[in-house]
Image 1 (cartoon, rainbow, N blue to C red):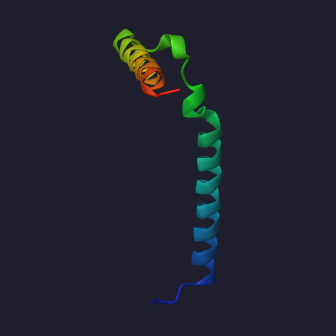
Image 2: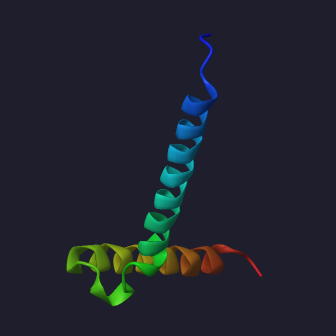
Image 3: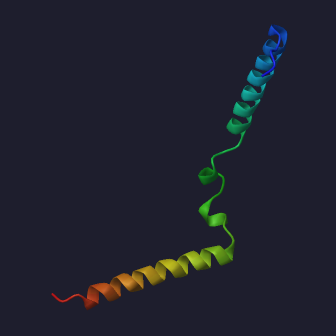
Length: 70
């Protein structure tokens, strides 16, 4: 491994800290993905698939309840 001068290391450390600060600022500017959209703003085909999946799950749950002996 090549030896680096103290000036080169100081410059590299300064640049590294500047990049870390820039990354921190960028991550603060963008919201978390869960907060990035409203559930009512989703595309209609997605909402229909989600509703169909919920209905199928409810139907399966009711069928299982009816099939169990009391």
